[in-house]
Length: 157
Length: 288
Image (cartoon, rainbow over all chains, first blue to last red; front, side):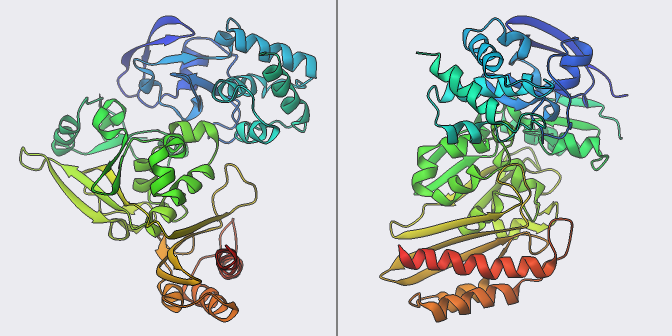
């Protein structure tokens, strides 16, 4: 195993330090080293979006990010969004619209919806569909997820 | 998996070039290709891993001498949102919109896409059509030197470029499109997001009346690198677009490519796509 490297970053607003091997992904850092299991491992190659987190305010697939590249950055996971007003609105809208079935894609969907609504507070239906094109859901057929994001956008008034 | 002995995060291009001159290194930018390739066992890490992300001078988009100068670390999302890119190289902005997914566009860099040199690389087709050049930086004997190569020379084969191990791709230079330029970009995939092209086509030309000049057609996923369709370009050059010239160009493009069959499409299907889609792009240009 390659020598570990000490990194410092902010996780959900909390200054955090960790010792990581160079090959480790940010997802493995979050789930296995830091124990936050809300972020999911789906495909592990950037196809499904279940591992979506915010890095310096932008959504990325944490499974494609090197943990050592977290150095100096601000990471927000689904756990961090619980305390965020927009995050809480999206969560509520997912519940109300029935946008959660098995729930595996939900953390990634909510984080990606947060990214979308931050950039486009009043998205069209097409913008919502494009906004979640990198997130796969095998249960809902997406309809209720799109509806939930629309609802969350409407609740921003 | 080979062992990474050292990890460096240089703060300047100079520092990065110096580290590269000292020994073999794996370069990390967005990581969106490097990470899955390493999981699949397709990459052998060099003893040194250089994270380029902290180098401010490799970020940002500037306009100099009428050219776009795009830093190697510019993400696909940044290209997509950039006013200068939309204005001066709209075909690049259009291709960026068809690139993977929002999450990957937020992380993947233009330099990474070029250095991976996939024949299906989404940025390669628009950049080849636009006549882009790449600037490579190195520090062979204590001084930072740069050389500029046309993209066509830079790309050698799948995953292979003319970048020497001691060099890094610093900037992509793209000539601004002429005011009378027309452009079209087409990417074929089984779904809009997160698909690797079965073929892609970039078309750039100047349009005077209904005639095309300075025609440049770039094709992706039909050869070991992205290629220009020079025979098709020649059939169109200076000619008025009509059913005969458009059909001749589409046939020329189909006949000059020699794609392979793979999981995404058969060689026959790729050739048909090139013919039919180029034909459609040209009729669309003729009608506008």
